[in-house]
Length: 92
Image (cartoon, rainbow, N blue to C red; front, side, top):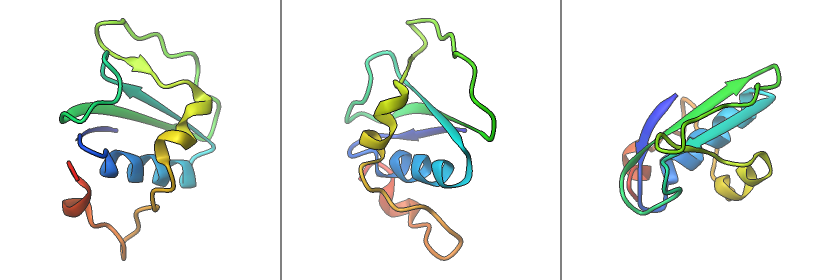
């Protein structure tokens, strides 16, 4: 999933929480300069099987280390049909 977010990254964090709720394995690819307040593309990968090592060119992005996903999510709520305030989360 390719998404754009910035600021507090509320939308990206909620999407990561949602994928983690559905898939056994989740990876996050960040811009080369990592998490910033600027709006930037971020890529989430979800799988029921372990995700192979993602080889990303340094100029294209960085893979968030596996143990850091919970820190990135930081308690964000899982998005659902009855809770999807994306307009309030983007760049919030």
